[in-house]
Length: 513
Image (cartoon, rainbow, N blue to C red; front, side):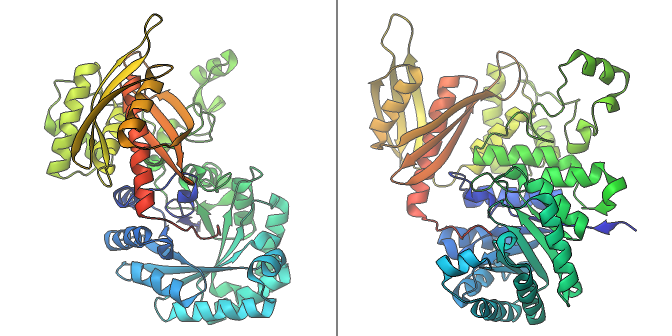
């Protein structure tokens, strides 16, 4: 009989701790709905004690999801646990996830607590959380650098107190697969009541070993993997959901495990996360990268023509990469667009559909064919980014060339008030950014500017991503348009709006588990 591996997705919590990757409530709700459709067992919706905005987002997600377990992170304080419960109490399946550090370096320098005091703190936290909900997870922060016998002691204690999941995190990405596998085996062997809880692992990718460590732990007996879509997360990121799932799916002869993930929804979910966060997936990223199913070498191409399995261990369709895409154009009607968007996973209201349809018609007049990537960009910009809009582009005219001084004339709406002006720069993009900064009265530092095409062809929409910093706040901005200068202006304005949102909703992240 195939054994089940639980997938605990923390894209909305640990993934959001990627620099500049903060999401608003509408974006989190859309992603949470997608993750439930994907089939994750548990969705960690956020850290409610971090901010009012995070509390609101977790609360809205808890109310909306019907099948997926919704977890909220908390430290071991009563205040944090109460805040977590307040956010998830209306969930169909609520879970409190509490944590405290267990490594000697954290105990000495961060917590300034003895081992016995930490054990008692963990017991108290789990016992209290258990009075609020049946499902309680306990994480031993920096577990991979903790004493094995101490881990067994604290896990035994919290299981006795009511923990249903105990999590062994490789918080700083320090572990090596063989070492991590042996640690999992040791815990399973030396924790007397381990059979009364699920052993979970949560790995970071500082040495590029997050997926390898997670799979090694699963092979050694762990039965929950904590992951993020595209492997996003602070520093080098987290274990990638798509890599763990497709490894077990592709190698059933080795793992004999079932994740219950609908693999054909992996690629659309990956795209959605990239569109919302503005974090571009590297082309050579396993499973979901643009080159993951590309074959350029002649020998490879010859083998592929004879039998795809010669150089592909999984088919593109398995992860939702269809070779036969419905192409829409300027003659396509509202019903055809609505039907196709529903097939893509976007169930829009009439008002939302009307807004997207107008933009779709405008785009269809500019390019011959509108494909899925174009529609994703429209939905992301027109629906998911409707909250917290302070600045909005109304009009832009740019002149540039080898014999003229680049200049931009721009009209913006700022909090409902129309303003316009002009400015110069070293090129069309620099001119546009300088003018926008002057009109908005902002002085953000541009940390990154990247351009890519959503599809092939000279009429493809350009996708621009910027990273801005303003008084210590970092935000990503994203914009798309067939005109790359317009896409750049949209991205810059989107980044400024996100910074304004962060100013109004300051977030204090939990230490990474």
